[in-house]
Amino acid sequence: MWQTAAAQQSKQQAHIQQRENYEFDNDIPRYVEQLKQELTYPMAWGNSPIRNFKKWKKAARQTVFQCMMTPPRRATAWNMEVLGEEQRDGYRAQKIAFNINAYSRITAYLLIPDGKGPFPAINALHDHGGHLFIGKEKMIRPFMVTREVTDDADTWAKQLYDGQYMGDYLARHGYVVFSMDAPMWGERGRREGVDRNRYDIIAGNMMMLGRDLSAFMTYDDLAATDFLAQLPCVDAERIGCVGCSMGGYRAWMLSALSDHIKAGASICWMINTDAQLTKRYGRREYGGFANCIPALRQYLDYPHIASLACPKAMLFINGRKDHLFPLPGVEQAFDEMHRVWKSQQADSNLVTELWDIPHSCGIPVQERTLTFFDTTLKK
Image (cartoon, rainbow, N blue to C red):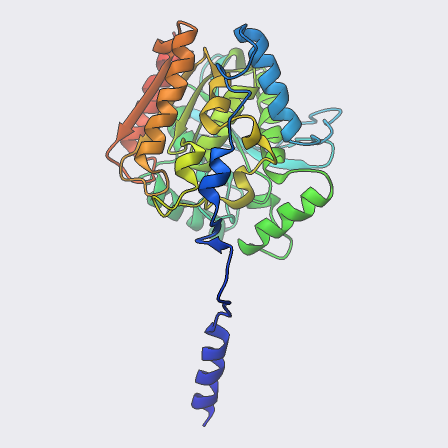
């Protein structure tokens, strides 16, 4: 009797109420193609009436910042504190605390090569993965944490990075490497614990306050790069950034908006909106509010924003087997960016590559990224 009742209750809970008529299908509006036809991207280079490239960059950047809504107030001082340190193979690992903005004092990892600096530096930007329990620990092997965090980080490194922590790999080859948690990840998460479903609710509550959670992530990446540039161990003229997946999105956003960044590497995150949101590929955006900036599509598409990094050195790698980014949209985005770099006689600075890989950043990709940074930041 109990088993029968339990089975009936489970069946009732599994039932989804549906109406005959509906307006949304596969998480996007049925009229998605009509909406996309109305996107003309008037601030894109070539679409904008501004013909001077420097003036266009200034105006287009301002448009991006306006859509990012009100920024967090800047901290009056960084007040960096070294919480702990350990010697590793060719570099020191520090766990630090500092004021990322006027509201939040956060922890981060800093890897400093052995020898005499200042050194070139990399802001290592972690991924999304629908996995919020760890953030910076996805990029740098953690210490001063619980065994649960260490085990989780090791598992994640095996899953997405071939078992190699990308930050540690770059530090062994002579780079200062910095990594912090984005808002909602790691030590910047919910007091109640990890719940992916709450991310969008929190993002909505932030919008009620006139702020954008995704923009706060980018604002913090900008502030963290400013912080990195003033460290005595860092050569402020040789700073780059790298990330995979959401970290790849963060990398080209940061490269587009920060003058401190001289070279950026984005792995497995480039597309145009036409291919990102369409029934042709059964696609919709899985990141939710992680890369949602209000009204920005009314002015610029993803490759247009990334083109604000021109004429900097940029590396984009996407996977032909990456189901998150349909290949036609990736190729169109790459073509759009090359058009911009070519217009500034800087196309040799833009490297776009398609690999026979899924959504991942394995050892061969990390080796390619190191070669790119050695060419652009060490020469």
